[in-house]
Amino acid sequence: MTTIQSCPDVATDVYRDAYSRINAMVVVGEGLADRHFRLLARAMPDDRDELLRLAAMEGRHARDFVGCGRHLGVRPALGMARQLFAPLHELFLGCDRRGDLAGCLVIQGLIVECFALAAYHAYLPVADAYARPITAAVIADEGDHLGYAERWLASRFSVVEPATLEVCQRALPITLAILQRLADDLQAIGIDPLELLAGFAELFQGALEAIGFSASVARRVLARAVATAMGAAARTATA
Image (cartoon, rainbow, N blue to C red; front, side, top):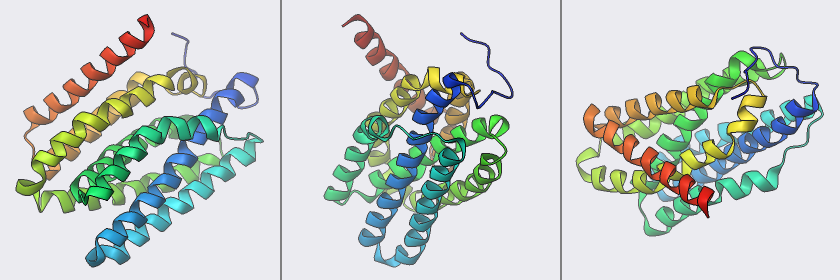
């Protein structure tokens, strides 16, 4: 494993190449979050205004992070990012078509938001001066989004518990596979992928407990997802 610098040189070709992919993941992820919250606003008229507010925040994040790449003169590798996010997006759309609001909120409101928060927290100490205040502001917003999903799911926990477990079994390995795919690029911009994984696991376990799961069940959900993701990676490596 390469040594991770606390203050990487943003002018190097290695940094800029890796940043083109990481920045694209952020821009595409925030853009999809905007779309997801707008779909939820259509499906949940009682919470429409709040969900549209969250969607607008996500859209603003996407534009702000486009600006971060432009500031460094880096063009985001959007095609790769769309490909990596496609399985999660399709899973969300499937839940939306079935009217599975709990599944939608687990994917976007818990899994994606916890992943984003973990990534932004890991990036903040090594961000360039332009991106640092933007990232700090986004962190505060993403916590608001996570809180909405936690409250909605917790208030219906006895009803949504089975759907939550089912969608976690499908969506978490996809999310962990994205992290594995980006590991080298994360290191190149100064982020330790294992620390990011640990941050995500801590946030997601906390989110599961906040909606009603016991700590032991939350740990088992995460452990099962890690085992599934590692098994898939091993099969890919030997194929």
